Length: 143
Image (cartoon, rainbow, N blue to C red):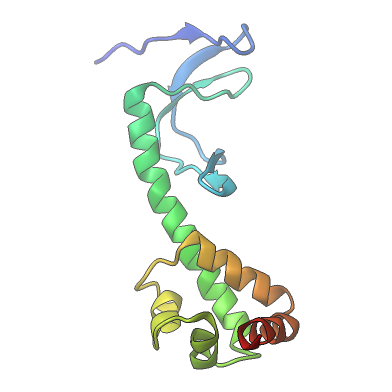
């Protein structure tokens, strides 16, 4: 059995840093301020203040896992937004308006493809006031 290396937390100077896997942790990742860290990930964490400590191996592991969480979150949000927008505009009309290829939004909605963060943001902004945003986009394209 490998002995766990414990050390004093440099942030709070009270807690002990231990390797923990636990639910409920989040972290900033790319343009999301708080993405859920998979509960099974073991990360050195202070038992007093909760600060997470990353060495190069942990960073690589967390980055790899968080990329999958990030891509899943993009797919989930875009599918939900496309459902909302489908009440106001057809997917084909929206694809044409945004310059996307025919059938692309269907692939996004089914999770077959992963959208860019920029497209997710663009769709989310349109969804805030679809009729007004669609009209604005049409006016911009017509001028």
